[in-house]
Image (cartoon, rainbow, N blue to C red; front, side, top):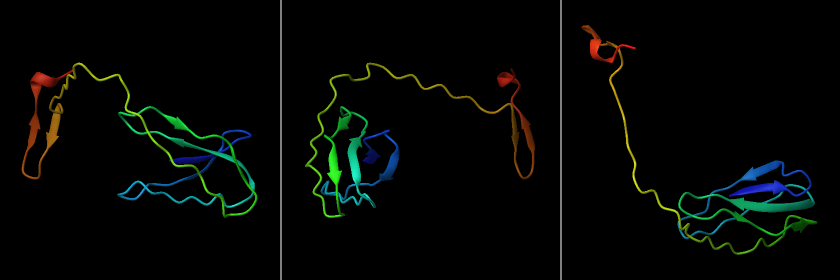
Length: 98
């Protein structure tokens, strides 16, 4: 999760949740902030504006919703480097020349 300033969306702080999904953030100074959460496979979340006057502010509970879009197919292509350097030899993979 990312804590951002409302006025200019400037980055303030980032935090991770614990295993249960609980989180704790401190803004550091007074002002208006919002939280943004990005997680692969879930819709992005953006909180309402939270005004911080002191460090004891309760941020909202966050519930993420799974995205409806799924990958249909993934193709992974790999090839060896043209030149491989080993401790005892040098291998030239002529098949992979560019």
